Image 1 (cartoon, rainbow, N blue to C red):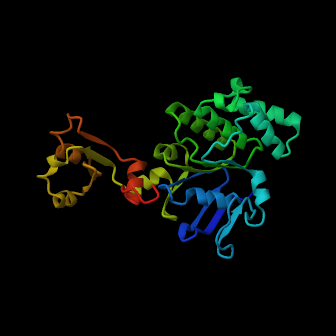
Image 2 (image 1 turned 135 degrees about the vertical axis):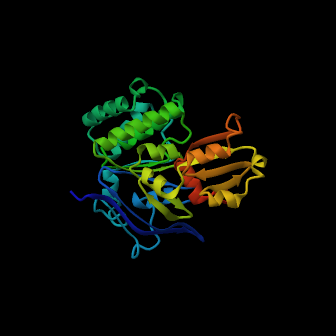
Image 3 (image 1 turned 120 degrees about the vertical axis):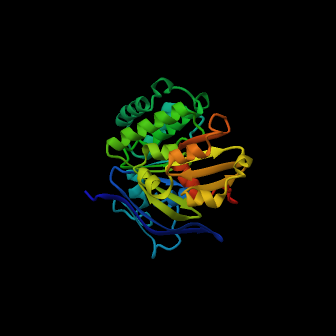
Length: 312
């Protein structure tokens, strides 16, 4: 079997005069989970749509995409047969029960009725919805509807699962439950392509991440390795910026510290936790100062900036 499940090269997509995706390229290995991160309007959803065959690239002469060897420009149906897609919106049929929502989709895939019933029972159990089989969609919580949408995408036992912001708006308990199900799928050999706004989500479930901004890939790699290479180990957050008026920014820079001030909060980054503690020792006992390890969100903001763009 080919090691590469998905290959994307020089993907470009524009809408009118707006460039949504600009020269994007990456590969996903079989059984790997790749996460696309970026602000709203970064091009994540558009890229997923082209890869899955739902949208066309600008120039197929320059763009090369293969999903298990199939070209979405010419072989979109073959790709759809091997893929499951979870869009941002749940788009469930509110007139049908939970079970019937899955049964209708099973017919779209041409799954025989007896096999479909077994598969539906299996998926409802997998997503912990077995007690809701006869419930109508409007009787379900948002988390239950999201889990049902994921179950629907798994009906055809896909080799590739594409999830566009799978846990947005869900409470932490449901989010962690879905993360665990994604891990189970990956352990069973499913390849995953995920977009997310949750940095912790990307850190928890993605083998590699790509941070996108304005349609371009800015950085790519394993979360832990990116943190080691591209951002300091620690950051102190100080909510009373005037308390640092006596500290010279140049002096901080000479000591290997980096500072940012945004919306009244001062951020000081350093690889030396002791030095940060000494600098802020008079403030650490207050609620206005906190030292913590840097995380993926800090890296994301360093790369894409803290200021909202026009599409956010």
